Image (cartoon, rainbow, N blue to C red; front, side, top):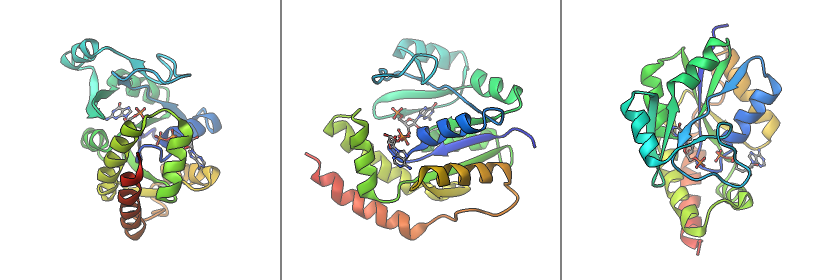
Length: 214
Ligand code: ADP
Ligand code: 5GP
């Protein structure tokens, strides 16, 4: 089957990075990861060229002007972008290319690679409480950054309809397998349908919990 552009989006902490890593580890011949560029600083353990290409704002702007990005977006005050060269590198190797990006970028990629060249999967946390536990467990954001990310998460959840598939990341192995099946057999089962009720409940719960973060 032809290699596809696979867009994974999720509210921050939803598990898209974990799922993308698991797909590459489990099926290294089928998947490759597009390493994005960002102006945010590395988190402990993150490595330049592996997790991101960490650029200064000037470098990022220079590469934008040079037309190096397939898409880019601003998120929590920082710039993030998918490099065309990264996508081409993985596709040229005959592998599906995984893009772990936010919703605005996902929409831009969909325009450049209309389905079936791309598949868009929105990853949902099982509940707002679990999303908060995972975000807090990651210990990478201050309370104010966390609040900003949760507000963005709510905006993103309202746009989940723009995606082909919604997958709930409760048990990690099942979520990884579901995404894999959606990518490999797009013409088969439609997979998880947009779970409107679950999304509405998540937004309501998150609104309440975000107010309680001090
Ligand atoms: P995102 O990339 O969407 O911001 P991450 O992949 O960084 O999210 O996941 C956020 C946190 O949740 C990480 O600490 C990760 O280990 C944890 N996590 C992800 N998926 C699961 C899961 N299915 N069960 C338990 N913890 C998970
Ligand atoms: P984080 O700072 O948690 O690594 O990422 C913040 C957000 O930026 C996440 O939603 C992540 O998916 C998104 N992101 C990462 N790389 C890119 C990119 O290249 N383009 C866009 N549009 N978003 C990205």
